[in-house]
Image (tube, rainbow, N blue to C red; front, side, top):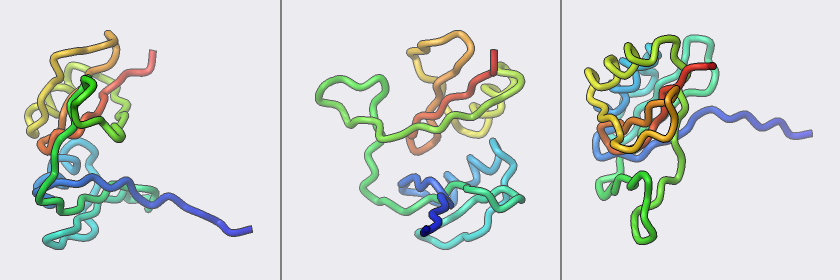
Length: 123
């Protein structure tokens, strides 16, 4: 049987290095590849990481989206042990907190390129 292994989730951005540095601050993962059009972060254990690809015409999704809005294609869920501290870390690194928050134990945020991600605590 052929073995398949997910190695990365790729986010488009007009600034691959800048977005990688943002997620490096949140996750503590080292930058593995750093080229003008492609940057990767991967945990020390070599498991699946994040990659950032240059998209000069990137249009951030709208969340929550209306009928005619650019739709969200994916979002990242990041488990935290202290929600207020994690939100402070994220906003200090350049994230913005979404106006609409659907749950008390989750904070929806947007990274500097406008990709949504959720900070959440296990209940």
